[in-house]
Length: 257
Image (cartoon, rainbow, N blue to C red; front, top):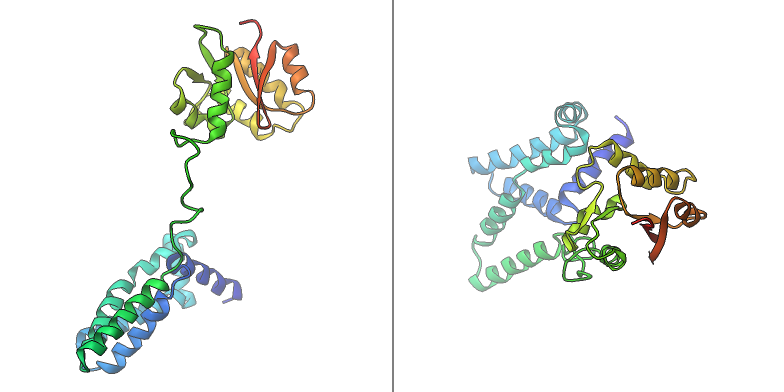
């Protein structure tokens, strides 16, 4: 039983409860219910059942057994078994409806609800989960600029087939379906896998040579590729002339078409 073991369990607990105070309120209410309503069989069953689950989740032998059954990466799902919301709702209502003046109970109950809301973690409406769309298509603006540059330099009636960086392929045809791609979301062909490998190792001096050979072999008349030293000269020597620059990417068109 090591420190790293407890740290792992703590991380898994944080994945479920996050930065909220629900776990603290949950444990406090459990203890209060067990101490105050010792004669209620249902409350005893609920309280000791929750404490037993928590014990099983942190006790080394049982925790290791559970991890082997469901995996450490999803160990936080074990805490789904804890009836946290039920205990919070039932406990607060049960406590604040016992005796006292009605207006005092109402104020205390409102304060408890407010405490739960304020302590329930961070707001989900943040930059990590949501962002303002850059355009009406709700795709990255650089994809729009790629597509506009290609369409601008394509000859009238020319069929466009392009090789794009893999991170942009899923949104190109959302903007304009006239641009055909060497690969899309499912990259099963050997040519697609080789092309993606070229982008992943784009800084290599051989990658731009490989991507050029793939484009030739697959009849691609446009290539969108990062601009590195000697890239323009090599592409030009193979018949692909730079027609535009978008960010740090060059747009190359086959000169013979």
